[in-house]
Image 1 (cartoon, rainbow, N blue to C red):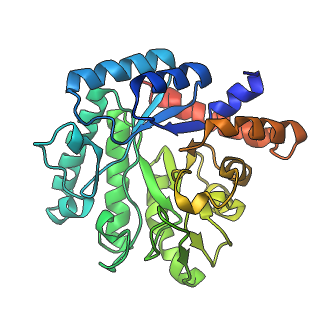
Image 2: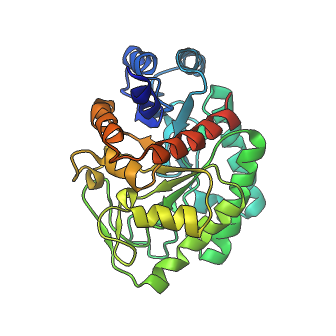
Length: 314
């Protein structure tokens, strides 16, 4: 691999293949920034998981070992700890802010003990329609309650040395499911801007990563927000966000409308490519060499990702 190709590879946070040997090969060969676990924990003991993650970290120093542990519907730890209950964010908050934080702390410490240093939580989306796709994963309250709870969660994780992630910017609203197909939010700018409030609270609390959704928010720009320069400008320039902007998983249907979403996302302003395909590295390298993908854009992303790795290295 050329040094340019190595730099570009370090902007990928790849989905685990589910195979220990194959994961290790990818980490050693490409040195991506991180690895996301989904079903890898099923059938393994806690000891086995810790051992595997330690081997991964040896193969790639500074590795971001990431997981989706929101609680409720999205709870990867349930495969490892089938007897432990992981209620949703909303269920915890209904029992009070102190209970919400105490339970969030337990989960963060479990993750840290395993060797996982990045949790793609909390969900900062606002949704008050129980029929909407994202509703069950949100705090199920308005902006005035969601913002402070999100901020408190992020500050707690920072104190514990685990990276958190506010998602899904610029706010899902009541749009459809982008895992299966493109989805559109047709609200007015005034309505959509309300969804920015929890993200503003997250930024003020020092959130290290913000995940950008794949849905199309018509009032901002056409096409998936994860590939939209307007959305990254909104996040980085208008909201003054200096952390890592990570795409939602690029393996999802809504972003795969493009032949190389990795290139579109980086050009638009993404710093970290979640679920990016490493086989597209030659396309990125060619775009960087031709100037289509500006050197400054790559440099900015590298600095942000390296800072995240330094701050949350285990």
